[in-house]
Image (cartoon, rainbow, N blue to C red; front, side):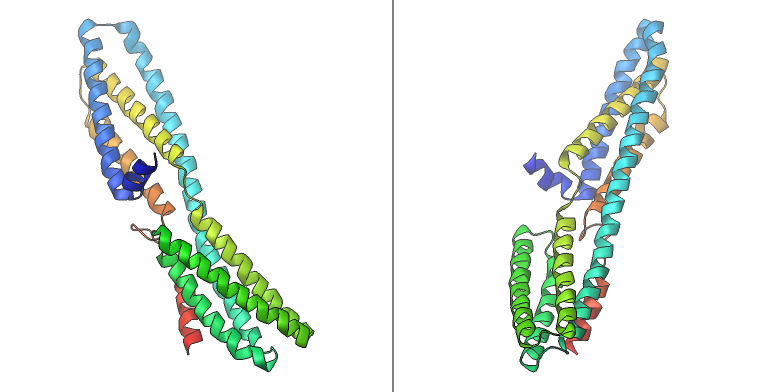
Length: 261
């Protein structure tokens, strides 16, 4: 399963092509099997086909709907966290100016580096090594920032210092939420289940057409292609860096430019 996930599930459009070929193949197999029923004139078996076909396609529609909603919800969550993190870092930057003087410039420089790391975190989501390195670098900078916060709290235990610590804590928490959201993907088992039900649905649909002795373009071609395209869009939502639907980190990029000035 890991090999299949990396080579096929990793690219939604390669997956769409593979799924389309697979579903078209199952549809053709179903049509040929249905032709045997048509030739032998088995009316009892033919009467059961419609109910089975409707049940399977109904189950497929339900699974596709739930999976699409899951992928869309996770995509929206990642987008909200980008805005939340940019706001948290920006607030921390502004409040850093009110720290005791020895800490102002070091903290601001750390925040500049931290924003660069968070932008690189998004760019490296598709590369496990780069992704892990971005997480490690971010954690090291967070530790340095927290050390400055502790020293500032000892030197100036004021409400202003407390506000800086509060915003820094929000920055660290949001970072952890973004990492968790980036790792949350549609499980490979769900994708396999969708493919399995879709294959059986295409088989049953074309089996019914074969039992009637007629080939329908809607069953034979359109249904497999629409299902494959729908599943590709679901996987596209689940990706952050590839495909037509990509997650924008424009708030972080704008913050990065602002801090460099």
